[in-house]
Amino acid sequence: MNGTIEQRIVGLMVERMGLEPEELTSDARFKEDLGLDSLDMVELVSALEDELGVPVDDEVAASLTSLGSVVAYVEAHRSDAGAVA
Image (cartoon, rainbow, N blue to C red; front, side, top):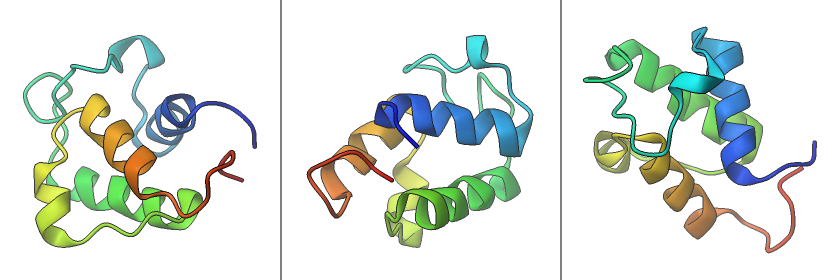
């Protein structure tokens, strides 16, 4: 699948969490602005690992509080320099 990392993550969150794309701005906070709970965060981490091949440990997962923080983490830790397949 082509697209920017942010587009891929937004797509995963829309598909798996039922959020609207318009809600997913880079500074929207998961808990405070989007109402996501710890189970939603587990789902997000699972999606990052399964769909994008980016491992996320528990300590890192706790620091991912917005779409922008997730995008920055994935961009810094993806395993290839090209598009994520």
